[in-house]
Length: 142
Image 1 (cartoon, one colour):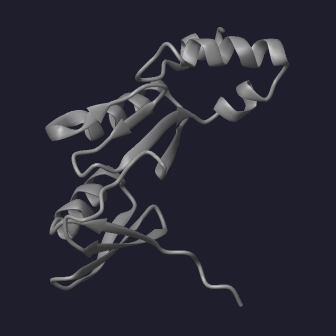
Image 2: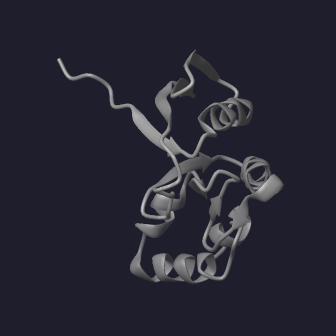
């Protein structure tokens, strides 16, 4: 029987602070174990391990977590939460949180819009490429 995957995030001494932060961002979340080296936690049923591994490795956009949002209010919530206190906006719905982890904050229907007719997909992509925080209404009206 296959075991579920667990995402391991390497922090420079901030694993517990990151886990605490993420557990405030996502409502159905909890910290399950804490040691000086490792913090295990769950975010919306997804298991994570934060490892205090030191400064040698840093997060980059090669790995990101995608949050599908049903409403503009949800997009606004995650965008504002991740950009405050040292986070950074990027393009096309991407944002880095204060720990350097990348997130894609996108409408739930983005895949459908991008896989519709080639003409519609091109219009949607052209609109998305002009945005930082995504605007559902503008994307759907493209």
